[in-house]
Length: 238
Image (tube, rainbow, N blue to C red; front, side, top):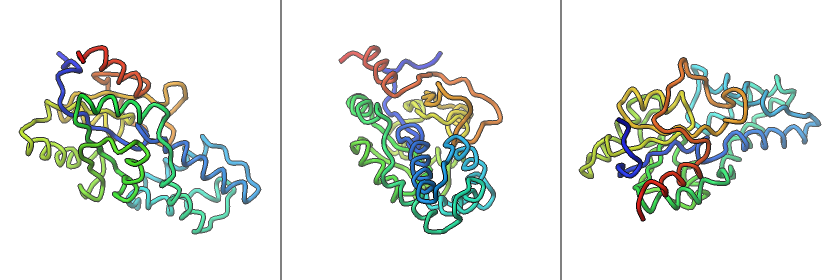
């Protein structure tokens, strides 16, 4: 039996891709670089190339790794392979926007649950994302804090230990994320109840996120954060 929405104490969140529109941010930055070079950049092609480059053996921590990624994909997009452009792509992460429903939904959910961020981004970037979202988090875990990235189970175990230090357990957690690869599959294997926010439901493919080896059927499935917050409001008495 899947636990009811009102039975959880914590909601853990993937941030980049679930709450923050990193695909839109990447495409906007690459389009700007393209305009300066007189090149029209195809956004979906750019995301596919990004995905291939980002998940290589020599990848670094995100979003610092965007400098390396840019230099790896620039020529294939017809863009100048200049480090300054890669640094722009990295630094523009400070200005990535939240999805239109993210901040309002988190404000609603924060009245009922303790919200915990779980992001593969570094702490410097997360600080900007959290501010963009209205600083809704009770706690936040980054790649700097855990020393690893999802889908490594060690990342999740760091969060489990935090919840246990407050007298809770992983059974008190609903994990909310858009990435089948980074979050939904591993959360299932670790025994978490999960909620898939299918941000690309109206688009083909996996965009900038690596494709999972197999699809995991989530416990809860919504196509927006607004739909999740609506469901909580309908399921949990005020």
